[in-house]
Length: 181
Ligand SMILES: [Zn+2]
Ligand SMILES: [Zn+2]
Ligand SMILES: [Zn+2]
Image 1: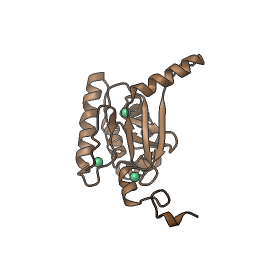
Image 2: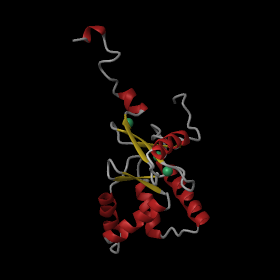
Image 3: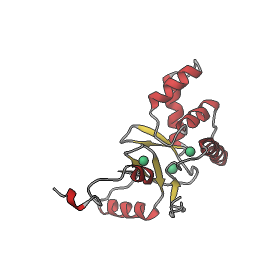
Image 4: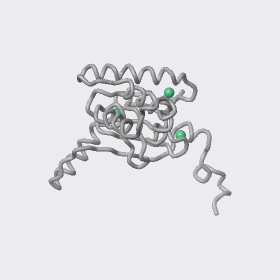
């Protein structure tokens, strides 16, 4: 493992190389149950199943993929029902929507109010979620100077995760000196 360990500002890490993903899913579902109980929201079986499917992997999931799976599972999963379940999950802070990919990821620490700050790996598609209050403050202060009130903040940063950087070392920087053209 690397030396960097998740701290309070990391809400969701990239997928560990070898891990039991069922534990990620069950942890996410119990956190969701707790968050819903705390705020008096009802996690119906369909909402819970949609959340479980969003957590199916560490990469974002598109609505039509969810529709395809749910369509096979239950006849009553009409598209509007599934979209409403996604709306609920978003409003409850259990999933976030990544606009750049038009896809959803599960929130690693639902319950608290936090801005959406995401690191998206363009290699494997996994997503990490950050909560850097300093960043939000800076943005709010800059916006305020323009008389702008921030309602929803979603920052999507594209890059390459540690695993992908290890498995596909970049040529160029760090390559043999004779490689210069
Ligand atoms: Zn996992
Ligand atoms: Zn979150
Ligand atoms: Zn990656």
